[in-house]
Structure formats: structure tokens, C-alpha cells
Length: 325
Image 1 (tube, one colour):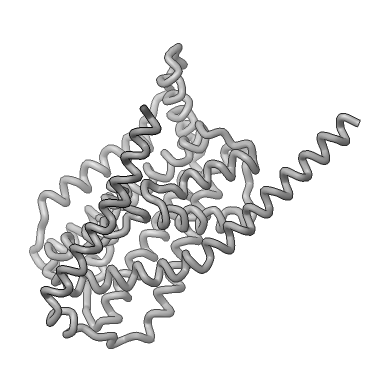
Image 2: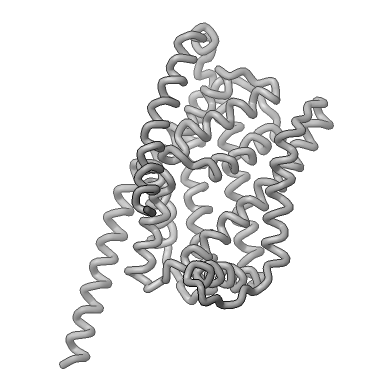
């Protein structure tokens, strides 16, 4: 039953992707004058976008590194940066975040890191990201309201819901008792694993600061992408649009949320008075620079990590033989 459900999810993801692409092309075709009016006024800023995408990968890698430390796993640069790139790479080419599976398998084979503990770290990443993005979203929404009088009750409620839920998880997560039910027992282990991370204040503060840096870089990238087309958006607007991308994490249907993330950005931009042509052009530019980085580094670090894993397996095999001898 589980396999059938997973197959249905994968098929729906791959069917949804071409539908989104067709809709985008149809919109561009029927609104061509709006797009032809745009031009690369500041094309020299594109290399800065590529550097920012690298910075986002570094920030994600550091979050992975710090969340593993409470479990006694200390990763070197090749591993934490490589896992960041590889995760994003496989998330991009597979639906429903296949990069997470690749990362879980690597950590299990290379560091004997259990899948239960892995899910605990994933919970930590989601909780911290939701807290940072919802906080930034509420603050930027307030700034936009005071600057221009624009207010979106629906989006503010969404931000408020994520903020309260993530704050409770950060501050008041109780220990869960073991259960005779295997499913509930696994859930308790995951929850208690997150609790172990949460109680390490130094790690939590470090991860929160790194997640804030990641959001700042994302917002800077969005700001620059609009500048490339000569469109001025405020810092508050770029932070707001970057924060609303948390919905793309929740609604991860297509590979790398392709189309979903752009749709969320476009519809959110309309509330700020930014046209569809402007927001879609900026979103596509960010996506292209991101793909350029990920498709360059993804295969490289896939090879490096696989090679490292094989060496580790070979050394373990040799050690076992010597021990038997």
C-alpha cells in the first residue's frame, strides 16, 4: 500500500510539472508585449546572483553540519557542503524531495546515522526554517503596510500560524514516552531526537543565525534579480517574497518545487503591485542561476561523496578481515 501511494505521488508530480510549464508558456505567449518590454538593463549583476546561490548552498550545508553535531557526527567541508549541493541537486531532478533520501542513505552508510535520527534533524531544519521565515514574513508585512498601506490578511494569517507552531516546537516540546505500537514508538523516537537537539541552546542559536543568513541571501538574490531588469523593489518586499516561499517547502509536488515556487512568488507579488511579467521574469532568472550552480556542482559532489563512501566501506572491510585474522 505504501509503495502504491509513493508511486501515485511520483506520477502526479511528473504530470503536474509539464502542466505548469505549459501554463507558463501559454501566459507568456498571450502577454508577449509585457515580456518584450523587459530587458537586461543590469546584466552585469548576474554573476552576483550566482555567488549568492553558492552562499545559499553554504548556509544549508552549515545547518546540516551543526544539526548533526549533537549526535556525535562532525562533518568536514567536503561532506557538509557536498551534502547540501547533492540534496538540492536530487531535489531538483526528482519530485517530493528525493535529495533527502540520498542524504539519509549517505549518512546511514558513511556514519551509521539511523533514519530515525535523520528524521529528527529534518524536523529541526523545518522548525527553524518555518520560525525564521514566518518571523521575517510578519516583520516585512508590517514594514510594507507602514510604507505603502498594503496589507494581505490571508498571508499574514499563514505567517502567524507558522510562527506560533514553530515557536511552540522550539520552546515547549515535551518528551514522549515509548509505546508498544511500533509506529507511535518511531514517532516518539523522532520527537525525542528533536528534543535532544532543541536542548542544546548553542546549536539551536547557531542554526537559527545560519538560517537567518540563508534567508537574507535569498532576499538579496531576489532584490538583485529585479534590479537586472531595472525594477526597483524595497528590502521589505524582497524579504516578504522570500519568506512566503516557505509554502513551496510544504507544497513540494514537482522536482525542486519547479513551477510551484514560481507560482507562489508571482501571486504574492501581485499583492505588492508587481506585475506578473516582472515577477515571473525575476523568478525564472533566479531559477536559471540556481540550476547553473546545482547542475555544475551536483554531479561533481555526487561523485566525490560516492567515492568517499566506497573508500570508507573498503577500509571497514579490510579492518574486519584483519580483526578476524
